[in-house]
Length: 366
Image (cartoon, rainbow, N blue to C red; front, side, top):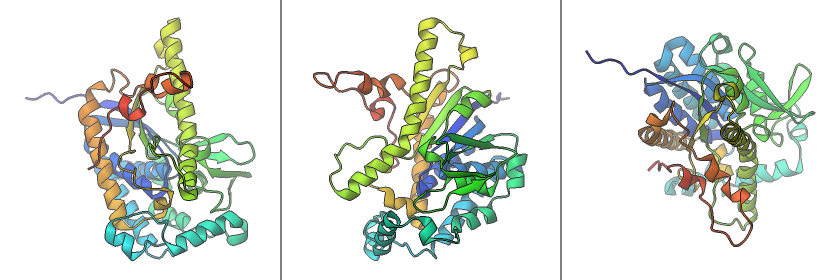
């Protein structure tokens, strides 16, 4: 009789990124398929938060299979709702497989309009189709009854500029809307007298809840905002796109630097690793899969695009598992020393350091 291999516990940290969250859906789909893995906790922001609560609802109802079915149902509903959006890709882009919307006249019109007028002026009744979508597809009683995985959702407190972490049993439609509230598109979400914007500004996603509030030491980060762009942006659109990516990666990089410094303190000072939670860090990054996509594609929810992202995510997760499964529970498979080497070296006269792609395997979704 073959003895069943014990499961390995992991925490998941899920970035936000609009419809690019369908790539995270693919990653989750592959991880849930692997019975060698057990998810202890999930920290998510924006689309990452939506994936997290949908997974929790499905898992509470029907285990791994239920979670996979719930995620598929949710993203199908996203695509169905997008059919009625005025922002659509043009026929040429569809024909050529270009999923960016930056040549869509309606997208360009609304993009420029939101730079001139606030959502309080453009949308005084605070109409938000996304709220209706989440409300109709997610049963928050089920989410809040789910004991494992623990769910942590990040939003940004507008007045204090600090992160607000929401978790069970206090997750609601409004906490998810707060985590996904882009201030140029939606009015701030009010919860208990406080106003909130998108959590990506302060924690994309927040890592400290996974460090402090779960008993797992293996943290797998699913990064869907490209960290590296080799080409220098030169047009106005390219510059804004790169600024967007840098902004939504900055909080993650700050949290990783804190963990990196903690690692170095543990090694240098001989601190008790268990007491100070010497986390093992793992990264599934989608730089290669998303290299031809810009920020406009985050509003593209056509089923063809979401399916492409889902399959890309499955391929990324599959490649990562084949390469790094044995490292889970043993060591970090993402090299934080290499990530921060550039920021510590002199500005001139030195050899360039490794990029994140060189310090951890770059899995192509092709």
